[in-house]
Length: 588
Image (cartoon, rainbow, N blue to C red; front, side, top):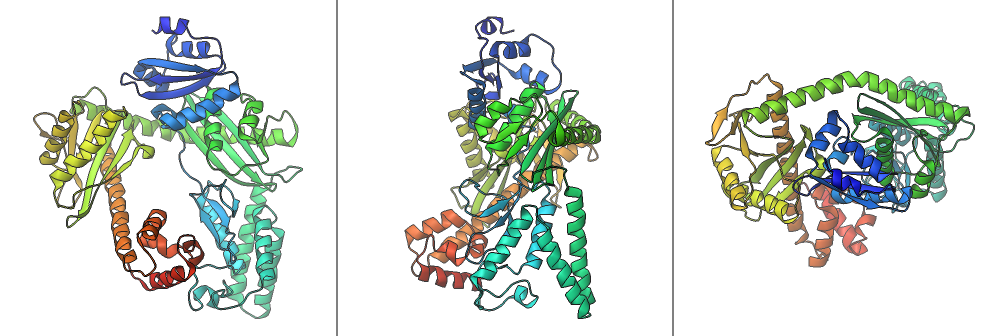
């Protein structure tokens, strides 16, 4: 297989692109030796996901680079450009929260997810894979330090002021020195120095006890215990207190388990862990995972400890951080700890992962057989939503190998406001698959529409008019809006499915996913439409400013959350103040 093409590949570093019969890039990889790596795909037996990938490869391309560093950078850019399904299917695409201390005159402390760290002027700490820990930390600090809690400035003191968790910045004149000291102590705590906060809690606890306010004293003691226990668990035996990430891995049976430990200020702050099937060699899998993680907007530690299968020199150059593999001492012990944790997590989870994969594979095979299809690897599901013919929208979710692929989800704002289910279906199917043809996107193996025979026939007519051959099925719901029947084949028939089966559960999951995705989009559109109407009636807001506000905030709720200072980036100060006052009294 590919004997002639492989004979031309050089023994040089570079990247390779695997493509299917539709010329779609399905996998991007890199190697120190392109010939050896590409030959390994086609000159030996494979199992698992690698076998599935190889079966789908129709042809390949490669790009030679001068160095390994160039190949790593190229791989990152190619994955971003093509979003290949075998590169992203089992990778972690979650965005982890950070703790943010804002740079506003009167700062706020909060957890945030979607940020651009390179552009942010605020103090950021994290990431925190344990969302609960991040929220608990913010809760404790906000109770100890009376920073501003409100997103805007009310005209009178709020509840936080009356319970002692805010100094009433909306009405009181607070010294800049006091605010500066609070910020300094919070930053010190988040960098690992807990003594200042625990000393404060001890003082408060003793003060409440002296006043016989035992409930408040007990509350302080509970907070103190939480910090002490957490701090004790987080202690790491390192001589220096620099910020370090530690990456360990364990592989077995074509799966790889990866664990990242986040050490901040000498304390083990949190961890991130994943298990997924391997397609490449373990060194390449780990390398790709690390490059994906650090190419996102994440905070940069001083050092990253990695196993010896990673080329530390290349990674240090690419990411401008110090990557190293310790061979002895404290840091070697920490690296061994990460590797040990990766192994333990693998042993804990693999039974469940394999059982889950077996259920999904069995369900997909049953669905394929019932609909008489060759494969159902990629399924695209559609749902429509409107309110009495207004704000018509559609949503599409994608399941690849039985799992949601959120990067492929799409939203459609329908051009007509007429309450016409068939017209909406016709428009969204045409727009989606005309785009598939135009941009040569990966084609679905199956389309599922939320509806009956009429919707299926409309979708099939559109698909046929575009010269495509993609099967269309439908999911009907009963009077209680529960998934009831699978419709498919030609002519269309009702296909019986055992409601206790794994296939029924998978189809129900797909239907719920697309329904919730579409409904949430519909709510956003309605809110945006209401906001546009509001803006038309505000003095000082013309078409240009209206457009900028809609682009920045999109919904009324987000507009309400914005501070006056944030609105002033778009509006003159007097207009921003009067508009903010209006929003505070507006009930959406």
